[in-house]
Every structure is written in C-alpha cells, then in structure tokens.
Length: 239
Image (cartoon, rainbow, N blue to C red; front, top):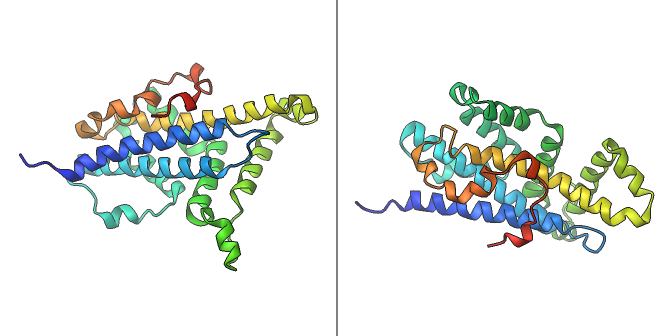
C-alpha cells in the first residue's frame, strides 16, 4: 500500500503543535521582573493552538467523510483562534461525546470561561494583526490592535482586578517576584485546561482511530490532573 503523505503530515503537525504549545508555556513561565518580552509566548501559543485545533478539525472530517479537507478549506480559518475554537466545539462535542462527564466539563469551560475567552481573543488579535506590530507602525500603517505588551498588560490588569491577594502584592515591592510567578501560573493553568480538552478528543472524542494513533503526542496534556495544573516546569520539557 502506498504511503499517504497527507495523513503522515497531519500526524507530524500534531507533534509540532504540541511542541510549540509547550515552548510557549515555558516562555510564559519565564516572564517576570527581569524578563518583560511577551512576544515569544504570544507567537508560540497562538501558532501552537491554531495548528492543533486545525488538526482536530482535519481528523473530524476524516472520520465523518473519509477524506481530509483541502488546503483551501484549512486556510479559510486564517489565524482566527476564536473561530477555530467555536468550530471545534460545534463539530466535536456532539451528543454522544457530551454524555461523558469530562466532555461536559470541557465544553462548559471552552464556551463560557470568561478568562479563557479573553485570552483567546488576545491571541487571535496577535495572530491576525500584531505579529509585526512595530514594523507596521514603522511603515506608517495604523494598527487596529495593541502591541503584545499592551495585550498582556490588559490581561494582567483583568486578573488583578479579580484577585485581591495579587493587588496586595502589587503594593509591596518585596512581593513582586512572587506576584509574577502567580500571574504566570494562573495563565498557564488556563492554557493547560484548553490543551487537555483538545487532547481528550484524541481518545474519548469523535476523531476516529486515525487520531487515536497519535495519542502519544498529546499524552502530556491528556493525563494532566486538576491538582497538577500550574505546577509543571515547561522549560524542562522542551524537546
């Protein structure tokens, strides 16, 4: 039987997307007083989740129709992570899957967690308009979004407004390091829950046997327990 390079490439894309996400989480954990460079985390996480969600949709179509989508179909989503997330929920969280308690929990998180939705909106704006923010400004283009630094500041301020413990740290310079670590941990947990929800689709979800053969690539998120979220040190997991 001739090798199906399209299917092989789909598996390689899953592998690449997980590596990007892990590297993005590592960059996120390194943000703090001595490192305010947000661009790598935005670039890696936006690319990793975009690619992983596109892989999920490819597997779903393969299971439903017996064929992979065309390049044109895949590119039609562009870099809109919000639209991709909506498509994943609508396509993959069917009635059969939602009978599982874990699937119900994942669906509720993906569609209604305000902090996740804010983060995905920020990543979408970055992926669509802000990857070359400074060069666009240099070139005289009026940007319709904020810089990665401003995006991150907005996310942090939204978190601080909800966390009185962090607001108290903000007024104590001696606590800045601990505050930075807690902010990073908070956002890591948001991304870990998203990654776990996507990883579960490869085993429990309606993606079919083809997707199941790549469980090894997503198992790091698949078996992540609630109590362990925010505790992994991703710079130690870089491949």
